[in-house]
Image (cartoon, rainbow, N blue to C red; front, side, top):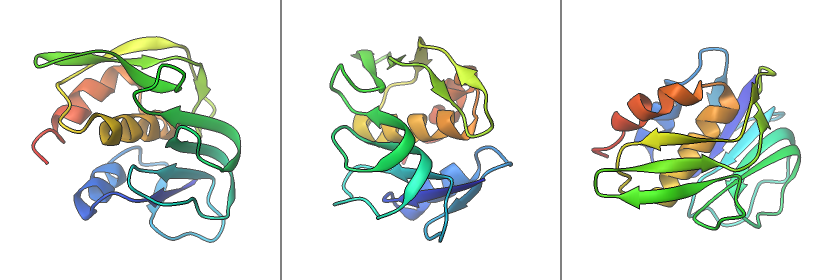
Length: 145
């Protein structure tokens, strides 16, 4: 499965590439299965994908759209945020690229220095097949960037 990454710095792209081994992470791809658009990217590439992880109100064609952001109607948002940590709220069930069903739930995360970017990364990792219970540890590894 090919996941196209739009946006993010080289460190974030490397971080995502360390995700599930069954996913090929690309910054360019002719026919990707999934698309991740991280904050700061203007517009979305004209591709049709199975799954798209995008900021709310992005114009994209996908069978499954996983929106992220601080708005309560996003698929991936925060239910709480303190200096000690936060809770990611998965507001809708999603299906990973590998076909695993992930139900709505709250997931503990370490404190987030850039919440929107980190929500995009968490949504991307979940869509790629990372188990929700692994997000805390994975995101701790990105805290210093």
